[in-house]
Every structure is written in structure tokens, then in C-alpha cells.
Image (cartoon, rainbow, N blue to C red; front, top):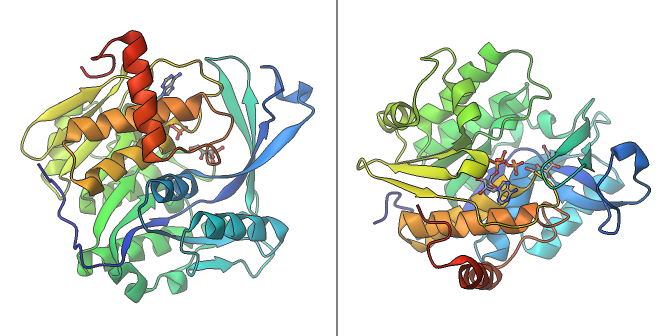
Length: 340
Ligand SMILES: Nc1ncnc2c1ncn2[C@@H]1O[C@H](COP(=O)(O)OP(=O)(O)OP(=O)(O)O)[C@@H](O)[C@H]1O
Ligand SMILES: O=C(O)C[C@@H](O)[C@H](O)C(=O)CO
């Protein structure tokens, strides 16, 4: 059953708006351990919406990125990487006041423990401004994905809200990936104000329980998952995905059904990137018109593939690789390994 009807005449499938940054992850041959002991890092494109842009493109969707990069070699690295992947970069603009791309150093302590050290002063991605938001571009796409981090500060906050308004006006579906990152936010009240503004307009909302708690802080704290889903269905959402980390995740659909999935077992390299693999594969399934449970299974599988890999972008798989992974894992652990 299709819960979101896309305008199939549009040339672009998805525009992703928000953060692009550079990840420096310990190289593959570095053992687990504290950041200060790491001698060699590998450089990757990073930032959740950037990773999802790569993920959906590798699945064959036509994606474009709406964001701001630094006017330097790292900005060039990001745009070159996107171009090589086949992502439309026509609406990526360069900062004019020397702002720099964020740098993220990932600490991989053990299979269960990792953290990130961010360099995000004078940050490029949050310089996206209302002048960068072009109605004709938004009109060309079936949907736009708003990453919650883009709402953390002005001028990016207004840019993201303008994109939501124009998407609404032009029937471009809105996907809200709450994508909470604590840096750059100044108060929990602000988080609740701006997250809820976008959640009210969104057709699909994806987030963890903690992220929905932040969204709902000023509305009704302490909701259950069922109450959360019903509240956003009462606005515009057709699908609300609530993630509970290793306990699994559930998609609540507008017709009152829910579908749950568990993570596929893997040896994790890091805790990051799972959400981006999940989003890429889940959305791919939605665009294919798959049943929601199949979208969730694909999402969960790709999430597992990404937590076991060293990067959050470079190792994103294509659909055949996800299918092979699901098949191999089911052969090893049994058919219903992830479906609840
Ligand atoms: N150790 C793990 N093994 C297998 N799958 C995992 C593991 N950790 C996370 N996942 C998968 O990744 C999905 C998303 O993880 P998480 O809930 O941490 O999301 P997130 O915070 O959005 O991630 P990200 O850091 O990529 O933004 C989970 O729902 C789960 O399916
Ligand atoms: O930007 C982050 O918060 C972490 C990055 O290292 C990573 O690329 C990511 O965004 C995972 O979601």
C-alpha cells in the first residue's frame, strides 16, 4: 500500500537540505581505542543528509543537495565527490565570509562505544540562507528531506523553513529526518519550537524516541510511541518512524497500522552512520512502492551494514548488496531474524 503519492512526472526524486561536513575516521587498520592514540585517519564526506544523498543515489534515485560549503579545497572535495556519485550539485553554494566545513573526528572505542569530536565554529552548513532556496528547484522534485540540524541557527533555520513552505505550496512531499545533534543548539525549547514546526508539515517523519521527546517537549512531554504517531498523523504525516536503537524500530502508518523491525546482527565498527543507511534504504523502498515492512527490513539491513563499516558515506551499498546481505544473514540466523 502506498502511503505517500509522489508526482511521477517530476525529474528529480529527492532534494536533501542541510549539513555536509568532513569525517575523519580512524583508518581500517587502526585498532579500537581512544582518539588521542590514533595515528592515521581516513577522510570521507559526512553529515547525515549528505550521506543519505549518497545512499539514495547509489540505489538509483535522482537526488540533489541544497547546502552551503566552504570556499576552499574541502568544499571542492565535497562537490567533486557528489558529482562523481551523480548527485545534482547545482544548488550547492560557497560561503563568502570564510566559514569552514565542519570537521568530525570519530573515536571508535569498542563495538559498543564510539563518540565524535566536532570542529564546528564559524560553520559553513548553517550559512544556508533564504536567498539560496529556489522555488523552481523545489518544484522539480518529488520530495525534499529536511535535516533537523539545519534548524539549529539562523540563517539556515529560515532557509529550511522557507524550503518547507515552498514544498507545501508546490506539493513537493516533505520528509523530516529529525537528526538531532547537540552542537549549535542553544536551548531545548528552541529545539521543540522548530522541530515541531517542520514535523507538523511533514509527510514522513523519522527519528529516535529521544528525538521525538525533544520535538514534543513544549507540546506534551512523555508521550508513548502510539501517542506520538497519532499526534503527527493528525497533522500531515502519513508515516512516522520511531527508532529505539538496538531494540528495533517501528513505522506507524496513517491507517492505524504499525510495522516493526529489529537490527540485523553485525560486528559494529562504530555507532554512527546506522541512521543514514536506514534512511537511504527505507526511502528507496518507499519510492519503489514496497510494503512498509519490506522498506523497514531494507532500512535495518543497510543500517547494520553501515555500523560495521568504517565510513558513513563511502561504503554505502547499492540495492543488490543490501539484498545479498539480507539473504546471507537470513541463511545464517533464520528467515525471520529481523521482522517482529
Ligand atoms: N550495533 C548495531 N548493530 C546493528 N545495527 C545497528 C547497531 N547500531 C545501530 N544499528 C541500526 O542503526 C539504526 C539507526 O541507529 P540509531 O538509532 O543510532 O540512529 P541514528 O542516531 O539516527 O544514527 P546516526 O548516527 O547514523 O545518525 C538502528 O535502528 C539499527 O537498525
Ligand atoms: O555529522 C555527524 O554528526 C556525524 C558524522 O560523522 C556522520 O557522517 C553522520 O552524520 C552520521 O549520521
